[in-house]
Image (cartoon, rainbow, N blue to C red; front, side, top):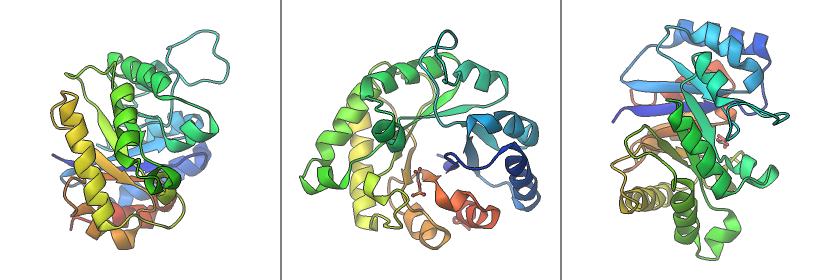
Length: 243
Ligand code: PGA
């Protein structure tokens, strides 16, 4: 399975900054046997569309609504992202869950729509520190996957990002052992739900200096990178971690 290195820019970069980043990134990036994906803010969708056309580098939105159009003020249409050439939609990021009160049922509906449009959803799952400390890791991941994937089409593309909430943006990366255990658990839950192998990415304070060790951890099929994806050089160093 090709490793996937995905950038989650969150609410950073305007269209001009995005285009500048892509210009620099493309001039330094050497294609390899992996896939690079940028999850850009929806205001930078056109910039990504223009900058990345025919580059082999893919992009998508960080969220969408569960309907393609209608009276849904403030939402993003996955259909339009697809029309612009985006191939991915990130769903259920912990910030969407905690700040915007998204639940597993809504995420499931979005995922179904994204797949029906021929785009690939990347569903984020992960436990808070309190949930981990209470011994609920398995329970939480099982709930997020069982409900989140309940409407998924098993014949269509899909990716999972395991991101322990306590490791996101904190500089506190999960240990190799914790990552290995969680990824093994996620892969086995996915199998139990009747899916064939899906890529499971790790996210949470991935940086150039821990990428090599983490990518060699069994069950890690790539990364979802926040902070370290905002600078060309630091993200390039991560996409080069297999070398
Ligand atoms: P981080 O964010 O790399 O800054 O921890 C990861 C994410 O939120 O996807």
